Length: 638
Image (cartoon, rainbow, N blue to C red; front, side, top):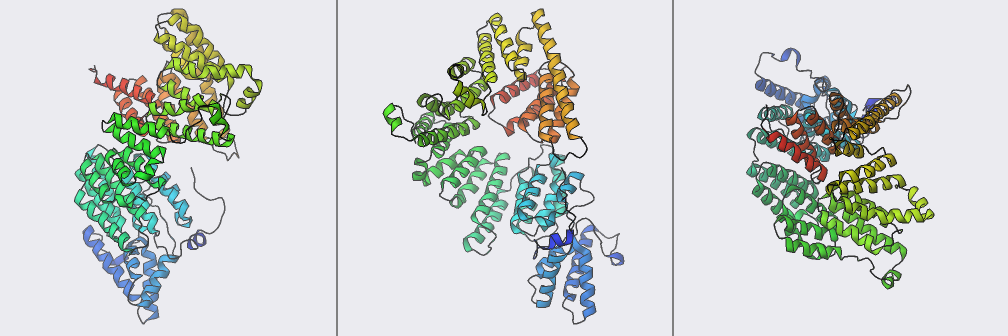
């Protein structure tokens, strides 16, 4: 995507206003020192000579000679990037004339944040970077960090060193450190060298972080002692209030990035020690404790959650998700009884009425809000793979609310979807059938639901589909066929039904012929959808982007063909293209893995599926596909 503005305003005037007091950088070109530089000298000596030259020019800013001051100023303007570190130090020079001129230089000069060596995507993100607000620059840092294959690494190093906002240069450094690292030693070494080249000798704290990180990349380890010193220096600044830009929250963010890296290097004890030493930085609020628990669980530091519960027991007692976090930590530690006790205690917070008398005591709004709170908890638990506790929360709503009262209908749909992922097909039928029956006998209710996210035929189709799959589980293939055919007729947009039909009975020639005829038609329809979206996107004068729609259409084609039959190579290309449009989407990666598997590229199928599972670690379907690919790769290959 392009970040170029639609207006033709001057870049210079747009940049100066928001960044007075910022920096001077001319990253896109390096002017060197003309005849004074020696092209044949050693690189390290050249850097030293440049620093000496910059220091001399800065001193001349305080010369009694006006001409000398102007020449020095012009030389520093031309040097741009090479002058930054020394000019930044000169802001605090004892000579007020030098300090004032340095401040003017760093706040008023043109800046180009990209280099000719940057790839096009990076240059677009950095286009007029300095003219943007701090929020927009933060957003662009995030985009750089998300580029595949660490394509934005050099730019993130550049921003760590030269971004005028002390908050944003920290963001740039931490964003780089959060990126996934390669298992290939050569790639890690290459990344480290790229970081070291870009850092120079800047004195900012994030520069020191990246220097340590680069060394860790090379050693393939986590230098616990070095990182503790770096973190402790930040803690000292917070505790003494000596640096206003450093806060407890910013130090805690650094601690988490370091601990996560230590954990990835299988140094869990070092990770735990670092977090424990700084646990007092977590503020005693529900939001901060929830965030801390969520991070600790994701990182695998379950004992941190239990320590937080111990320190803030009164807050935990009244907050369901905090109790569930503690329960999850106990479960991960093997204490199932304690885990279930806490889960039951959490479920009982803000109870729903179980009798008519209790219902009458609550207003409709209060009842709906309470049920909605339980539904949101259920969805969070489901996303964390805690399906049994999520089911209890869902069923609490279903069992205690009238079937027509919001959010009961939506809750049934969510529970049915979760049960479907868990392949509990008959239970899907049992959950949805009462809702369908009420819809068929209550036109007003049906009308209300159809104005929302419900589609009547989709629900009817789901019931028939899972009834068919329940028959398959029972070995009743013949009984399953009419049910699954009806399901597809009711809702042909659900290609997973057609995939199930394809694999249902490969020994029945008539069935196979019928399914393949339908499959060919569905593949043609999928291709037509892609063509239509591309035509729309390429229409002259059209400014609305349809990347997500096109990615979805490409993914549907690839998933359908990859799981059945057809042009596997085209399916693979389409899947790869969908990820170019929406990088690192776990469901798109799941499809790409299936396409690799379809073309017989089993190693790439496995590696891609592992990446998908890392992004969505609790998806039952993704885990089943991962198991399939692991078994295939374990087989002797011809």
